[in-house]
Length: 270
Image: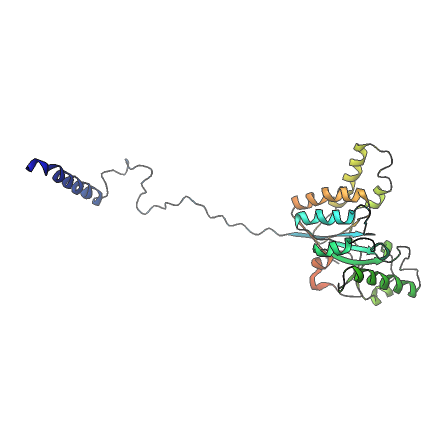
């Protein structure tokens, strides 16, 4: 019956030999050591720590005049394009164009900003009477409040960019002009007049290039949300701005606490 115990005895001896081998650090020489066994004291991690400096963000304010356009929801379509990138813009509205749709409230809900342009878009603030000037501002404010009750209006852009120094100083809003003109108004006048698709595309791209060719950090961009060509150009423009590292913000976001009533602004550098 002793032979029945020999397998167990041999197994014990084998395990003791293995233990002795491992306690001596194995039987490999340094040259023979497999690649997957680390050399004592050697760093085993292959991960690299990469520290990158945060890239400065270029910020610009995109602004649209003369809307809203309810007839084909063009203003809302522009808002939707902005929303795709998490961008916001400022819409300087014409008071008598607000009723009849919900474009203004829709823009506000999506985080955009509303400013005053004028009530009729027929009065220039460098030549009108004081009564006309106050009428244009007050009536537009009231029209905004009807659609977005309680909304705080802080900005005004004069029609045609025309306003006297005295009226800037006495204005109850910050007066916002621009530093980059897309000239979309010029292209729109000749946009769909029997031209070819190639020519239409060229004119849209021209709007974008008018902006991108001179754009820099802190600029205020002028566009108009009433034109179909502007909507088409906006889609291309936003993709370009995103690709080139620009953040698109409202005028108030661009300036922060730096905005003051009774002052005129062209860009964040002025």
